[in-house]
Structures are given as structure tokens and as C-alpha cells.
Image (cartoon, rainbow over all chains, first blue to last red):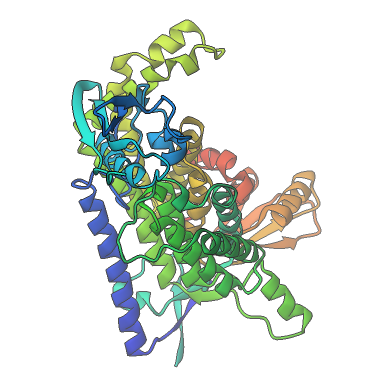
Length: 153
Length: 368
């Protein structure tokens, strides 16, 4: 079957050409950026690591006590607070399916979010996570993360 | 000015003519239906779960609007409704654009919503929105017929199709190249480690112990690692060329089924397999199947009538006990078993099973 060709007005052709080039350039840009960005957003580099991680997360109170998040916490539960599957159950060694860099970065941001979104908690000064990672079997690497400091009640 | 040009649809598009070409979007309509259903499945957990702001979330950019929970849920319901309309093909263009906007907004509202599978869905929805895939297999088309309005031809401008092809190809290439340049991936370490860590899943299976030992042995993955990277690179490149396209599509189907079995990728496998329809030559009814009164002829006739979702064939009954024959778009003719193999390999539901036979027979090396 022959293809019927209808000539586009020049301005529409230019717009379409510009659109195609822009979209592909942005996509290639994201793909290249994926080698720098730990999250590899829009870079289409899935399943990039077999790395594993675990974290001991504690609440440091204004009294200086270091309380594991597994202990009673004004009705809060870590898994409910973080929501995303990648950060749930941090106390056991887990596959960092997004990669170690993205997981640690998300955990760092999640500590800040939890610290600022637990209003019923009047005793915590900040949260702290001691993260153990194995990057594609290599490690362990220990990283300590600390949330923003909460205002004194 | 309309200019009819005797140019076969399989000709490689040149940059200066690419934007003028039109072709059938019948196969894209099939993709629209599959992707619409997949989008509903994709949105379901968001609709049934908690609002994004009730647990940890992180905006991509600070200026992106973050609506209250009620508005966000309303948006998701609108998206799901639009996906249903898109599937059945009612107000198709508007519904597809709305579906795209909701799925994209839901993806961009928080970094925690990001997934390569979801980004891929956005790309495919973007292509569908540009292509306007409601001209065939749609309520819109049915309503026009019912109102006795002149039918809208199922042809559309093809540059969005070529853009979508380039984007999908880039997805395979980006993934393949990242594995190629990563020594841990190319050397098989990543895959081997993952399999070893999931040995507890293998142990209760009926697999014999020696097979599990082989599957978890390091040496195997010195071959599997490069093979995995090569598979994605082959798909990304092979889809572009008529000689390798059938093989690339078949490998892609097997690849996506394997991914779906071995990993949690939400609706990615379904969308990726559905998106393979973009590589179907954008012309319809340009092949003729000649069927006689023989048993095989009747069988092929029934299969073509039921399974020719892409509208590739015109069916002609010879009324005599002649063997099945296929006249291709270039005028070449196949008879007997070769014609049956060829016809079945162009039916989507039979492709996965018949394409290998065709490839092994090596008789046809044309684009699908």
C-alpha cells in the first residue's frame, strides 16, 4: 500500500522537527545524567545493582537517650511513615533495588521528613541512622545519617 | 496540497520527508486498548492507597504543585476514567491526553513515585496522545458509522510514531549500554549475586539440586552478564531493520516475560510488549490471504478473521480446494505451509509461537 504524503506547512514542520529533536535530546540527556545521578531518574538503567543495605535507626531525645525506632513512639511506625517499599524494614539486610546511592539519599531525606512530620512526638531531638551497605558484594561501608533538629517543645 | 507518492511504507524515513508521511494507525489502536487497561491497573494501588503526602514524599522541584489529598485522589479517578475511555475509544484524543497528564503528574509529584517502568508508561502514553489512535477499533469510529457520517480513514501523520520508535529504542539502548560499561554487570557479578541471594526461592522448586547448583554458580554468569547486555542492545538496534525486526520483536517478548517472572516491574512488561506494535509496518490490508475449501484453508480463514487485530490481511476465498496462499505487499507469493506460517506469524496472538518457525525456515526476511 502506498503511503500518502501530505505536505505540512513550513512552520508546522519546523515545530514538529524542533519537538522531535528536543524530546530526543532531553531523553539522551537523562540517559547520560544517569551515570552521575544516584537515582538515575529517567535514565532507564534498571536493576543496576545487587547491592544490599540495612540501618539501625534511633531517636535521640532532648535528654540524650538513644531510642531505637522499634520501641513505642507515640503511636508512630517507621514503615507507615516512610511508605515506600525501598525504605521499609530497615533493620534487616535488604536488596537496595534502586541502588545504594539512591537508597541512602532517600533515607537521608526520609529522616528529615519524619523528623518534621511527627507532631505528637515531644521528646525527640533528631533521628539518626547508622547505615551498612554492601555495593555489589563489596563492603561493608558504614554511613551515619542525621535528620534535621526538631524544635524544642 | 496533497501529493500521492508511490512510496512503500517500509521505506526508511528520511528526515526531510519524515514529517509528511501518513500511514495506518490500526496497529496503534490495538496498543491503545492494551495500554489503556494497563494504565487502570497502574493507577489502582494509588487509588486504593494513602495520599502521597501522608507518608514520606520528596518533590522533584519545589515549584511543582502539590495538591491536597482530596484533589489528588480526584485527579487519579479522572485519570482512571480517562484510561477506560481511552481503552474503549470514546473521545479518544481527549481521553488519551488526560490519561497522559494524570499519569505524568502522579509520577512527577514525588521522587518516591519514580520508577523506570512508570516513566516508560508516560512515554508510550505521550506517543498515543500524539498519534490520535482513536480512528480504528473505537467507539468513536463506531458512532460515526452509526450516524452514517463519512468514516475517518485510519491514517495519521507518522512522525509521532517514528519519535515513539526512537524513544522506545533509546530505552533498550540506555539500559543495555549501562550494563555494557559496568564491569559488575558485564562480568555477571550483579546477576549472580541476585540469584544467590534468592536461592531460598529456588530451593523449594522442583528443580534438581544440580540444576540449582549450576544456576547459582559464579562461572555461569560470566556468560549470562554479557548475554543480558547484548540482548537489550540487539533489541534496541534490531527493531530498526527489516531483516532483524522479527527476531528482535520475538526476543523482546521473551525478554519481557522473563523480567516479569523474575522481578517486580508493575505493568512494565505488559506495556513494553504492547508497545512492540509500533514496529508493525503502518499500512493495513495490504496482504492477501487466498483460502480454498480445504480443511487447512478453513482453519487459516477462521484464524485470520479472529486474530488479525492489526488488519494486515484481506481474505479471499477461492472456492476451490487450492492450498493456502499469501500475496505480500510487494506482489510476491507464498503457497502451502510457507503461506500458513507466514500468515500465522503476522497474527499477534500466534506470533510468539510461529515467528521462530518462520525465522528457522529463513524464507522471509522482511519487516512484519
